[in-house]
Image 1 (spheres, helix red, strand yellow):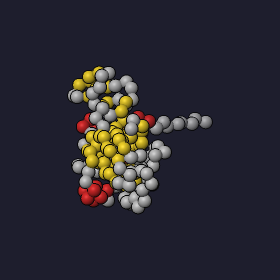
Image 2 (image 1 turned 135 degrees about the vertical axis):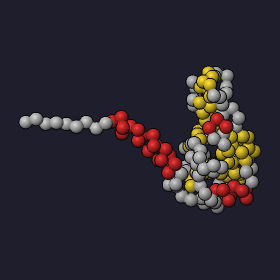
Image 3 (image 1 turned 180 degrees about the horizontal axis):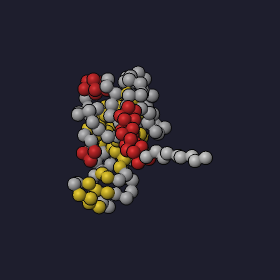
Image 4 (image 1 turned 90 degrees about the horizontal axis):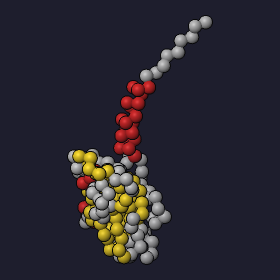
Length: 173
């Protein structure tokens, strides 16, 4: 008896992997609940909404930090809520390989730098939080040109209607 096994072309199957990854990352922004305004702020805390509404509809995920601690990954059309302690608070990105310049950089060309260590954003936004007051921070730009900026409440509430909530990864929610 002669049995012949056909082998699937695995190289062709691996070509679909990047496409599936991009689709799943884009759809991840569609899975959370639509924007809901926080009705009660915990006593002695402020309220910070951080969101991403790309101007051209295209953006990459952003690893966010608060006071040099990771708080989550924000994809296009997503937002997260945080209840920081009043006073000085810093918000920025958490980089790990290709990012803005630092002291330990290696130039790769086309404006890209490579860094061996994970490190906080060299250009974070400082926010002085008051108890019971809401603040709105928007991820602006994409890639190496990304930044976080404070937005007026009327603009932010309009833009947040396009976003879905994601959870933070720290206990300070």
